[in-house]
Length: 144
Picture 1 (cartoon, rainbow, N blue to C red):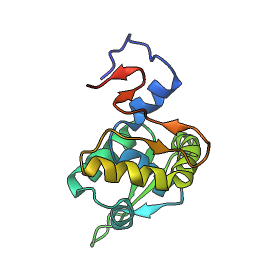
Picture 2 (picture 1 turned 180 degrees about the vertical axis):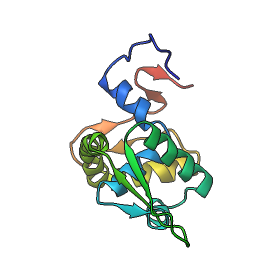
Picture 3 (picture 1 turned 60 degrees about the horizontal axis):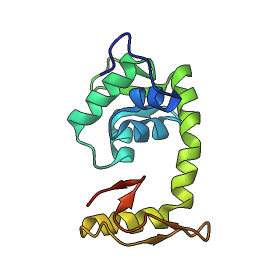
C-alpha cells in the first residue's frame, strides 16, 4: 500500500492503485453496462469466489467507485452500480477492452504457451509486420 506522502509515479500508477485486484477491472466492465444484482454480477464475472468478489466490491465501494443499494428484503436484494467517479474509470478502461478484443487471438496464444510452460519462442503480431517477444528477453531484461 502507498504511504500517505508517497507520490504516484504516473497516472497509470494511480489508476492501478484503485484497480488493484484481479477481478476489479471485470467488475467495472460489467457494471459499466448497468446496475447489477449480486448474483448477476457473480455470473458475469465468472470464476471468482464469493469471498473475493464480496471483498473487492467492498473495496470499490469504500473507494467511491461502486454504489451498493440494499433493498432490505427477504430474500435479500442488493444492487451494485458505478458512481459518477466510477463511470470515469469505466470509460478509461474502454480502450483496454477494445485492445483485448482486437488482439484476443494473440492473447489466447500467449495463454496456451504459458499453460505448457513454453515461455521462449516468438509471437507474430498480426496487426503489424513486427515480431513481439524475442526469445528469452523481455523489456531489455534477460530472464535466463
